[in-house]
Amino acid sequence: MDSSFAELVDNWHDFDLLIGTAAATLVGLMFVAASIGASVFTEKSRAAMQAFISPTVVHFTTVLVIAVLAVVPTHEWLTLAGLLALVGLAGAIYSAKLWIQLFVHRRFDVDIVDRLFYAAIPLLGHLLLLLAAFLLLRQSEAGLDWLAAGQITLLLAGIRNAWDMMIWIVIRAPTADVGSRDDT
Image (tube, rainbow, N blue to C red; front, side):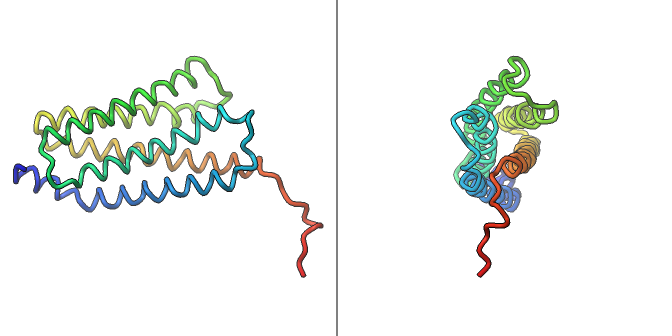
């Protein structure tokens, strides 16, 4: 490994550890939220679940995978750039498909803010990852800054979307009859 690249990447170690830990925690919490909200998920809401919950988990997982890739000690400029390009391209394609569902086909009745946070902003995050990969391929230190920007974009969009889903679940969750509770 090029010692200058190793030192450069090592400077980002704490960032990668922090953002990776946050993403891993949020992926776990998404599973908890889905379990808690299982009573509101029906066959009728399956398409909406795939359009909103699954992408949020994918974006959190993308942040986690990138954080793990970034701390592999044997990477060179080329290997990290290549892996980021693959992750960024896969995420961009995934986000573009969701973009088409939400913006072009208007498959779900959601407002513009939801469309932005579920499709447009994650697409931007994945495009930033592709930019980072391109810059790293050219051995530009700025690639790591753009990598961080892409990760932060995906993480913040995911946090907002997870909160939006929790509100959706709470509103639709069946409530227990207060009078039937056994307090003894």
